[in-house]
Amino acid sequence: MAQKHKTRKRRNEESLAAALDIGGSKISCFIARVHEEEDFTASAEIVGVGCYGAPAPARGSAATEAIETGVRNAVEDAERMAGERVGRLVVAVPGKHLRARRIGVDLEIAGGVVAQEDVDDSLAEGLKIATPPDCAPLHALPVGFRLDGEEGPADPVGLTGGVLSTQMFAVGARRSYLDNLADLIERCDLKVEEFVAAPYAAAEAVLLEDEKELGVVLIDIGAASTDFAVYDNGALAVCGGVPVGAGHITRDIAQIFGAPLAHAERVKTLYGSALIGPGDEHRFIDFPQLGVQGETARASRAEVCEVILPRLEEIFELVAGELPDDGMRRSGLRRAVLTGGGSLLVCAREGAERALGRK
Image (cartoon, rainbow, N blue to C red; front, side, top):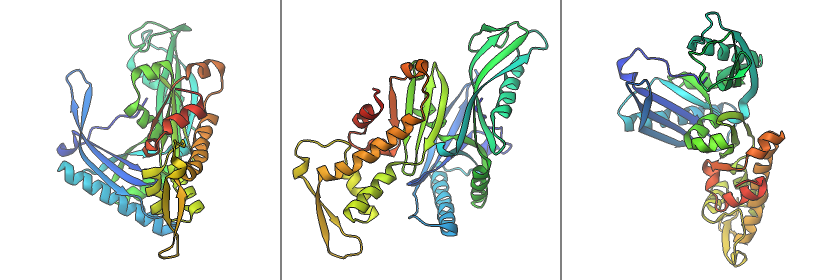
């Protein structure tokens, strides 16, 4: 059960929701105006966006101060565009900090008829049991229900029965990471409304309902890490992250060709590809040499692609190693969806199909 936005007391915040994502290459803030409908559904309109490039690599207090500056600037830019002020944020938690587990909970129905409170209680109990001691609970997502041992509908509320069995997927995150992140945001004169698992949020943003139902792997390639989420029969089955992203490709190019990181990123963006094309060995790129003013080195586009492909394959192989290995689920996962900045690399889709064996 994903936590919902709490009702805010101040009038100017009642229809606003603000989200923050602290990534490896940029810090982003989005402000949305939420419209409540008469049937209790809600729609959101993005009214403010703020992005701030991540600071140069630093250590210790310098890195923390740089991230604080980035958060302040991203939020202020979003507020300026929206013409509104926000005090609380929904904050994304990268997949590498998540701990997820599937669990079943049996609950006796006191009144003989399943109420919404019974469903909520079973999800809350399962989330508490499934979350390790060093983690804080984030989401309890229902996978399926049984009533007195019989397969039930997606929503059992109102049905008669004695025992409600709930299959759920519980997601938590390392408490120390959340505490440090909350402290950082508070130093920016902001508060955390709630934490949300980044791969779950990305999946909800880009996946089609049919893709979730038929089985799909979402791969979100960021700069510092890659998140993934697996949906099976319409429900989240696995989520997490691996500590390798598109920024590692940039570092590989910079190290092998002796170029500054900024130039390596530009070469990757303009000329990089996951596959070598016809004539690429005759297309040359100049690399300014790090620390030697005026000196350049020349390499073909094919040589650059030969640097990119192994690292991209490593990303997909690491993700594949985290996917479920039971036969039923593997047979259903015939499709993968790429998102994130790293997915914009030319021929990333073809590289993923070859490495994952999925469309």
